[in-house]
Length: 171
Image (cartoon, rainbow, N blue to C red):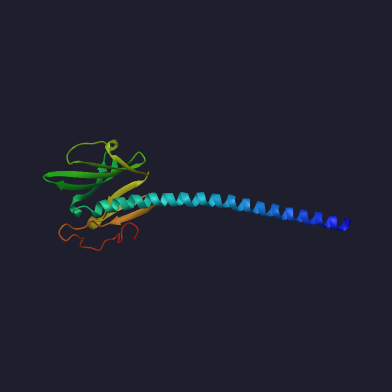
């Protein structure tokens, strides 16, 4: 009889030890998985911001009338992209720039003066710059990413050269 009681006790202790090992293993997997999930979502969020900014700028440039109406320069000491449009007999300018941690857009009648804080905040981001290269090619730098855009031509609706950013800022 005693032998059966001891055997029952050993079986119970063995089952409890196995259960504790299983519970500790599950807890470790959950802790490691949570850390990995945080890192992956942070990388995804950062990549989404970069892609959103580049896509926004690419769309603005591609929707302009011609390469002649796009200019890269400075807006109160900030790197800026200017897009000029004419509605009726009045010329308007859209200025895209980075100011105080935000990508901003300012739409106004050409010739009027505005300050960087007057623009509408588009998306929070710290590093954006523009540069016009040879043949009208525009280089947009956003964090670690760069986008090359060739604005479309006025007469034919397409640029005389192949679009460098084929398929948009992702292609």
